[in-house]
Length: 603
Ligand code: F6R
Image (cartoon, rainbow, N blue to C red; front, top):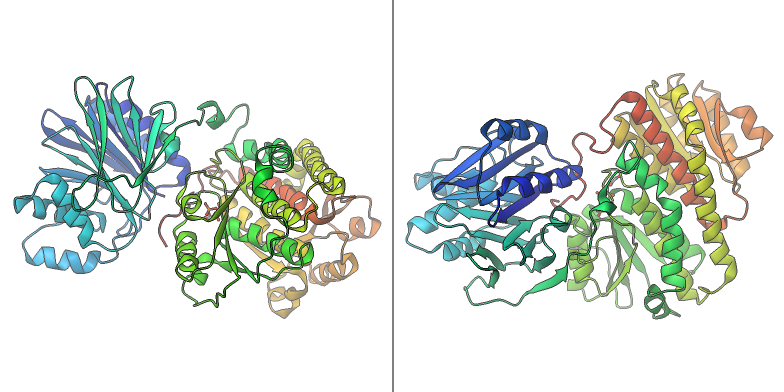
């Protein structure tokens, strides 16, 4: 969601801020802005639309400033306009914000009655006005930040610039925030994502909630201070060296990050298996040997929720353990029954998804252990979990999650094998190797899937169907297609179609039927029902199957042999390619689809 980058140091802040914001573009945004301290003035340049619009303005003015903050906004309160874009500023402070101030309406009313004016419709400006009010009452900047922050509710991160100094201030509550330091070049940074600081700040700090961070650069050194809200020094932060490499974030020879990330999957699968079976990860899994939860409460959002559905099947079928799966935004409010002996299992690529974090918090309050399957080490989910299973996907830049899904599901599978004590079973190891080989083969067939895409991409709607272990894949396939191709797509259990959705079928609707070797006849009968109503049939099914060949208008043949439990992950990659090629034919912005954000830090 909103991206934040701040800089103070001896160089022009514009370069690192714009570079950082560009790196965060993948998270989704609708306007961008920058505030620079230029000769004792706070100069704000902002513009709705893409970052390029802001860059054009910057090129026009060519500003130079040692201290600045930048922001990409994903609108929550107030339309997408230049006025609502961040930073918000006045003659004393400028502020950028990520999150939601839940009591903004009440605060705004009170401040309005006290005579304060607002220039935007955002909740964020309320923080700026509060800050200004406390400062005007004679408080220092630090006290004003503390008071303003204590007045608001909701999850938020703020970065603040003041006219009176070159300091950077930041504070957060349940929203991502990282402070960076480059001692060699005497630079301090702040961002919503360590990725923005790769190559700039080798030392990074993750403050805990309610810790005020202050970045100061003097002639000879850079200092980062941390304060509690009562302004005593705080040690509630974690230090980490920023080990990410800039190379890992390049697109390489691929046209899109999404494509690159699809292609990365075979190698990442092999690496993950080696990590958990043979290398350092083994220790974490060995601790799981014999472990049983009375019930697993799997909770996640979007694609990660679909991975949760796959893992539930593994836990039930491989481990014979009870598992329920919830969408995090539902779990947190539905008063789930959580008993002693249960475990909360949270799945997330970013580890910063607001609803997933709130669900984790709920489990913690109820005293049940929380485990995570997560990509970003050091993320909030990671830090708050009792046990973490990293998926080691590397940075996922395409907004549409691909490799993270595969590795989340595989990590859940490995966790299950560890509980069963069958991690060394060579059958499982070869099944995983087979999976990466088959996905590799599929990568070689991408052009063939493109031909299928060409046959169907103009159609009105897409219904993905699957039974059993392919049902979560039907949901995931439909989500991928709708998010990047902007077409209506739904995933259904194949047997459920006749209970309503079949009314949609006509010659302009495509049924992407996932036909695995299990329940094949039953699934094909469901396909026949669609065909009888003139629906277009695309089967993703076993190769060399005459019955399937005969029924399908287009056919993506797969080799299911020997894949057993992991075949859903294989089928899913075929659907990733299909969504990619349909989106490409439609000419959408594949890596940054409209309206979407990569890390959803508001509920
Ligand atoms: C879809 C997608 C989203 C995320 C969801 C959860 O392609 O990327 O549905 O899966 O927003 O995000 P994380 O995994 O970061 O918690």
